[in-house]
Each structure stands twice: as structure tokens, then as C-alpha cells.
Image (cartoon, rainbow, N blue to C red; front, side, top):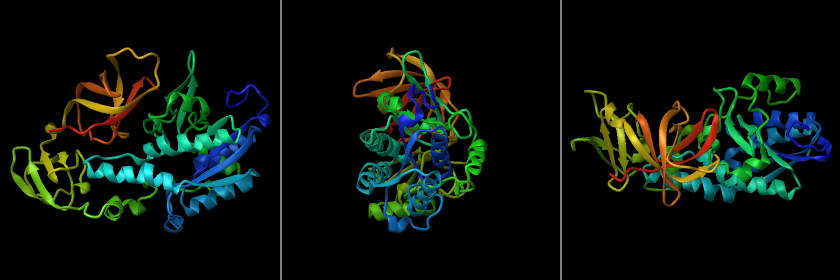
Length: 367
């Protein structure tokens, strides 16, 4: 049995590698070539090519497409660029804008994996006769008793399992993640060993379609009027000041509120209907339960309520909770101890040890 778990000779197994132009996907492709697979590199052009040229630190942009092509030339494999601008705009960018206007804090990278990379690209890979779609994500696909399971990466600092909670079981059957079992430093060493031009390329930091991290300027362009002014209210009803658009705020925010001194205040919730930002003391951020929508389940036959660990932000540690299923593919998550800084639009991901059981999108309180 070869590197990816196929019994056939690697040369008889076609593999499509999703190549962003970064070091991770480039090393994933190189490892597949080294293992003897029939490899095709594929890059998605996801947004306006002209705007992307020269922009560093973002995937699927002009420079990155060039870098991916250079890597494929070095490896001696074909490279295709698919124009998915329209699909990406509809499924990711528009959703991103609408989510902010609803007082949410979206994660467009999850939507991109969910709606574009692991859906449309995966379909294209099948159409090309591929047996698997390989990506450079730091996450592990391990065989369970009856089917593949999604697990955290070996390197906890690089683990991307939170962002892949929406991966379905059929998708997981087809996907492979060769970097999930190694630390990033080892990936860099592989890149140098293969002589790849991206060996020292810095990791992407920004959302790919948000230049310099200024999402407000993007939202202004997408949704004129998004910066409608409104009140900053204390939980007790006092007007403490005024803001220039709720899109400038997120749950748990303390700095940059512009309301002067006194005891520390945090953004407790956003009211997009009234264009209000509601603030209060830290303890008011504590949540004992939340509801999540569009629940994706990767575990065995679900018996609820069930206990597991959940993460409500990529940067938060997992905490214990009980999950209760409701109608409409919604779940109620009850924390064993209050959780702080929970923001609607973020993901709530369910874990059993290192295994990803699934998750859903956090709903906004109707207060």
C-alpha cells in the first residue's frame, strides 16, 4: 500500500494537488511526485487578477499563480489555472459582506473550503480521473474502524482542523493531507530539499481578497452605506458615544471603542437593525449556551445529547460542553462553564480528543 493508502502502483494513480502558490501546497505536490504518483497541479483564480498582481501574502492571487506554475515546471508536472472568480464572488465574498452587515464575524476561508475548494475543485479532480485531491492543510486524515476520520494536525501551532469542520464524509473519503503529520519546520526543509522557489516564501496572513487586512474598505466598496453611524450603548441603556458603522466592531473587542476612560468595557453584542453597539463589563461576555446552524457531522451514528469539547474561535482552547440537536439542522451547545467572547458568524467545532466530530455556525442572539 502506497503513501496515500492506495493498493495500486503509484504511477497508475492520478492525483490532483490544489496549489495556492505557497510553500505548503508546493511541498505537498513535490512529495506526491517523489512518491511516483501521476500528479496534476491545479490553481484557482478566485478574484480579479489585475488587483492581485504584486500583492504578497495572499493565496490565489497573480504572483501566487505564477509561483505555483514555477513549482510545477520545477517538478515536471502539468499545471492548470481554473477561473472561479464568479463562483468565489457569490459563495464567499458576497456572503462575507452580508454576514458583517448582520452583525456577525465571518470566516471566509471556511466558506471557500466548503463551497469552492472541497466542492467545485473536488468535482473537477474527479472529472480528470483523479483518485484523490491533495491539499497543503495541516490536518490529519486517519482511518477509523469503518471510514476515514478528520483529526488535528501533529503540530498544534499549525493545526487547521477548526477551519475544515464543514468537510463532509464523501469529501473526506477523496481528500488527502500529507502535511498533517509534520511540523512546519519540516515542511520548509522539504521545500529546500526539493529546490523550490517558494522555500522561504512567508505564510499568508490576510484574507486573500482583503488588501492589507482592511476589510472595512472592502465592505464599503461591496455595500455602500455599510458605515452608517449609530449609538454606542451601555447594557444599562446609557448612550456612551457614537460609532461610524457596526462593521468596525466585533464581540469581545475592548480597544478602539472611542468612549473614554472609566472601568474597562467590551463589545457585548451588535444590533444591526438599530445600528447599535452594546458594551458592558467583561463578565457580561460570558455565555452558558449558544445555538449553531448548518451542523455538519463526521462522527458515528449520532446519539444526543452528547458531551464533547468545542472551540468557538480558532484561537480559543477547546472547552467541555453538551450538544443537543434541534429541528432545522440546528444544535444547542451548553457549556460546562461560561465561555467568553463568543461571536456570531464564527464556527463552533466539536472535538472528541484530537478527532473532529463536526460543527456549525454560531447564531446571533435575538435580544
